[in-house]
Length: 168
Image (cartoon, rainbow, N blue to C red; front, side, top):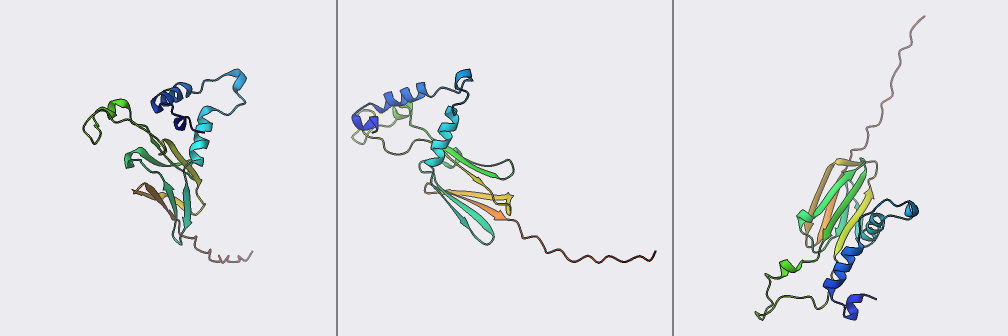
């Protein structure tokens, strides 16, 4: 059950979330527990839907990342073969809302209900061996990110090598 559905003010909930979302501090008694960053990343990966398609000359990764601007999205290759796509949609701060008047011309805009996804978007893919990490392109339209990774050309079959026999 979402606390927002129970009538709690979203601003108060966001403030509590920020207070509880402390940075990871090394602690001797909790070194066996997963870190907050690990748990946040795992949650973000589960909440970021993606399709992977294979074409004769490329792999195409399609990810839903609604509400983001292209400059809020990062596409990276880590460790030579790990495609990492990330982004974050943050809630508008009150100072941003002060400039936005409601349609009737009075008062500040305030949320009555929030259902659209906020937070981190994250997906990691291990690239196949024949993927070329040097030939990657990305496009973003209507909340959908499409990342295309070209395939390397197949290796040419090795020609038999003839060894000349020497007379001793």
